[in-house]
Image 1 (spheres, helix red, strand yellow):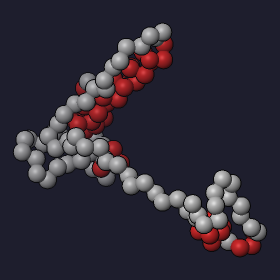
Image 2 (tube, helix red, strand yellow):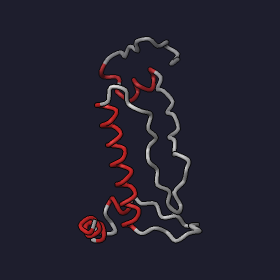
Image 3 (cartoon, one colour):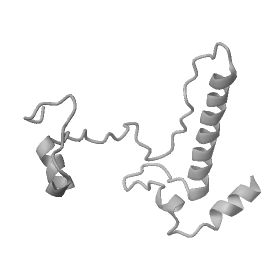
Length: 113
């Protein structure tokens, strides 16, 4: 564990791993430091990989819930990306350009539906 702590402690603050750690503005508890948060994320990752191996090798794998370690400021709501609107044939033709010829959309109507 000391080797892991040394690796994490000496990461530069501008590294991608450190910037990915959310630091809440309205934390009511003592915020976790980098070592605690990265250790929790690594434990969750190891747990996930272990469960994937069990599901892969077991003939009848048991139902297993993923490990989720709570820390101050971690939100329970997953972020969802808005669903993108599908492009119409006219949009695709405008993007590709008119020099490539006519674009035929298989399974779609000419009105974009």
